[in-house]
Image 1 (cartoon, rainbow, N blue to C red):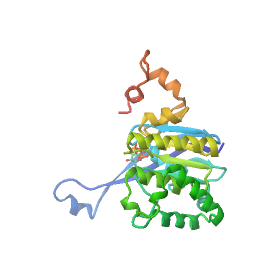
Image 2 (cartoon, rainbow, N blue to C red; image 1 turned 45 degrees about the vertical axis):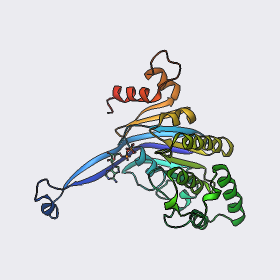
Image 3 (tube, rainbow, N blue to C red; image 1 turned 120 degrees about the vertical axis):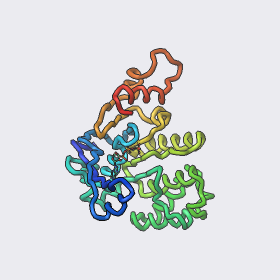
Image 4 (cartoon, rainbow, N blue to C red; image 1 turned 180 degrees about the horizontal axis):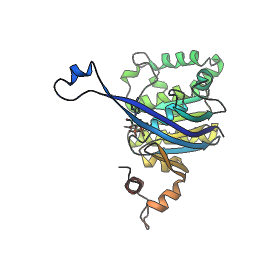
Length: 271
Ligand SMILES: Nc1ncnc2c1ncn2[C@@H]1O[C@H](COP(=O)(O)OP(=O)(O)OP(=O)(O)O)[C@@H](O)[C@H]1O
């Protein structure tokens, strides 16, 4: 298995300021600490070449899991091996084998042209110049971003930036790609283009992908297998068709996946 998680737990300490008009002053001397359990013993396996959907309501623990798997966060307990290594213990080696796209954050430098960010990534990942040239040409052509290379990132539209984020995440030919809400805020055309790209990258290059999204059309278009997480626990791991059978209305021409997922969250008391 490329990705293996067992009983991963992660809690965060949250500091609360005392309420009332003196709260700010009192808060300087004393703060109430509470613990939020983001992951309560998550476990799953993902094999090479799989494209798995990872869904759940807001605050379910999806991003926290992705951060653990990408080595950004160390869990409180449990086991996690990615390509046989522990992400937070072998960080340098780990990041050279994975790619991460956070839809709500950028890994590109805001004020410099896109091409300059790619050049920096080439040095960070120590990509040989010949390979870099080929891979950059291949990715920029497929994602249609050649004309954007000299433009500073802050001047790009969301859809343009997202395509550049994908180039950045795939330049070093990672074996695994974690995608945390990559289609958030994109229009229908950009979503379709991005889905097609991900499907092809998975099929042709064999890149293993874990896709976190609230857009059930993403899941339907890309993932045969889906994992549902709620309150930090894995609630379902299986075929999308299995979820549809259980939660979709009996006779429909096209399954309304958003309604289906809303019914499931209600049923599992996740809302
Ligand atoms: N750095 C942090 N400090 C405190 N609490 C945190 C932190 N990161 C996450 N949490 C909490 O952990 C829980 C899980 O958050 P997480 O971001 O993993 O959820 P999510 O499933 O990705 O949600 P969304 O769909 O809204 O992005 C939430 O209750 C959140 O408030």
